[in-house]
Length: 141
Image (cartoon, rainbow, N blue to C red; front, side, top):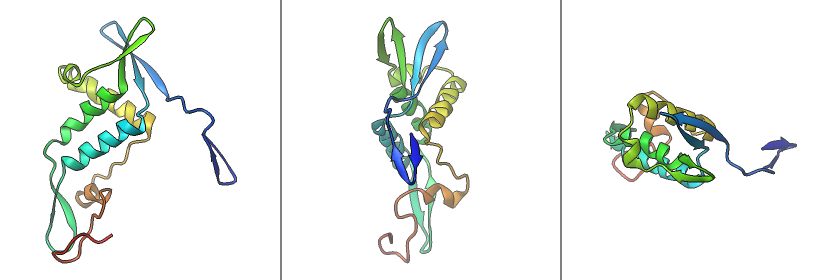
């Protein structure tokens, strides 16, 4: 991507890739597609339960949030078999060591510009749609 005078130019839509070797087997870690990023973000939102006490909405539970790391890895990691690339299924990734999955996940986020974290309690809900409410009514835009 290049930018000139406010004009964005995407001459090359080829996703960025990084070679990875796991126990002697070749893999390719690929930048997340829009579909992979969508599934990843939806998994984060589905795993968050929001509770409001009349003022602000805050994340009260993140049950299932740990599932998003291996999900994103499964959407972006491909086993190299000759000239073919085979997606690595989620059940396979779930059997790997946590530190391996974490390293792959962090690299994908970097490649894909998906590092949207805010460690504050209310910041966790900040990136969700309609993160504030007034009273007990529906969320305000």
